[in-house]
Amino acid sequence: MKIEQIYTGCLAHAAYYIESNGEAAIIDPLREVQPYIKRAKLDDAKIKYIFETHFHADFVSGHLDLKKKTGADIVFGPTANPSYEAVIAEDGQVFNVGNYKIKAIHTPGHTMESTTYLLIDENGKEHGIVTGDTLFIGDVGRPDLAQKMASDLTQEKLAGYLFDSLRNKIMPLGDDLIVYPNHGAGSACGKNMSKETTDTLGHQKQVNYALRADMTKEEFISELLDGLSAPPGYFPQNVMMNIQGYESFDEVMRKSQKPLSPEEFETAANETEAIVLDVRHQKDFIKGHIPRSIFIGIDGGFAPWVGALIVDVKQPILIVAPEGREDEVITRLSRVGFDNVIGYLKGSFEAWKNEGFEVDTIESISAETFENQYQNIKDVVFDVRKEGEFKAEHVENAHFTPLDFLNSHLAEFPEDKTFYVHCAGGYRSVIAASILKSRGIHNLVDVAGGYGAIKKTDIPTTDFVCPTTLK
Image (cartoon, rainbow, N blue to C red; front, side, top):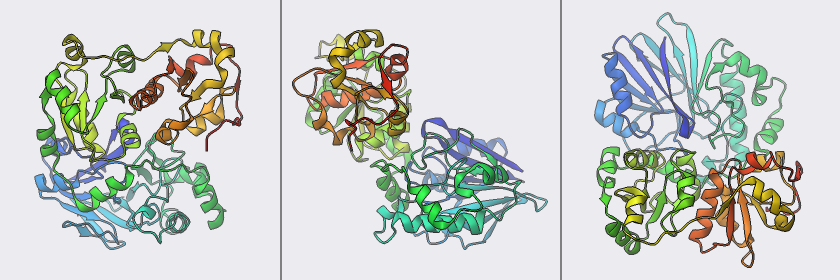
């Protein structure tokens, strides 16, 4: 059976291409659809169906543009109610793609319309299941997203639906089936996903905590909800875009590809409420950047951090990018619904600096310098990593101020003394420093190399959550 996983690392997202006898299907496509069209052309195949496992929260699907460009039918599972034409499959409905069959299995829990697609080859053999966010490798989908759309859907109720879906619909299937999930490690749609992106269902029954045969529904709900952090703020907005529709990707690119001179860029920044988003490497940002600009580097976990920290997908954005990568930045922003880029700095930061415009910097010190100063500054060390990282090990006496929720903790940073910020490797701490400086907080120092470099020094660490942890 021909099935290809098309994996996008920065979003930890997997789309799927299925082809048989000149017909193809795409499952859970990303916003830019040309790669899927190109892939089908290589097989001289016509895309017949666009299957959606659910209304996605962490990215904007490309289903509408793909339908417009190919004429393919969009297929959702039972209970879905999109604002555009789509096939709403019945539980158990079978779709033919060439000599293959794709069977819709309604598996509510992550969301109420969540559907798993069973892949059946030309010989009638069940080959695999595309599970969306119902079942991951090592985990299952979080059950707290749909409650944002309907007040009566508590996370406990959704977790109960998910338990039933797994036990009654997924676990009775053959152990040799390949599990094809929508996400891998790094996605915010689960909490304990494996780095592996496929596995057999039989092996998952052995190792995935959520598929334990002797697990009660109460135990499942308790374990699933334990340690579940709040979802990124942009998730509900992406869900609504996927339900209601959105501007075409081609139009987003057309209106966003506006090179601006330093003078035009400054005028746009002053006359609009745009955020200046600098996506260069953190080392370059530290050395010099436009005052009050926000750093989120394109070579890190770019799109998820944009969504977590900027929040409003309608926010106007001005881009400072390495020359030649502007289209890449616009594309990756659009994947998570940020379609309101109003231009980018032509010639990047060097053009700004060469024109004599104001420049800001971030003070940064090595881990060795940090070690030498530690005894005098240990009460003003701020760790912006995730909770699991902090709990595993951290600098003794450090304050826990996770980057995900930094905007909620601005009052925790001292106004009358210099403080020190670090993450794991230096990327997130510079994001944090840029946000703090944009809020007028400049009395900070970045620790280069983060905790990875700090561990190589003799600074005392602990694996217990210290009393200064922020709630």
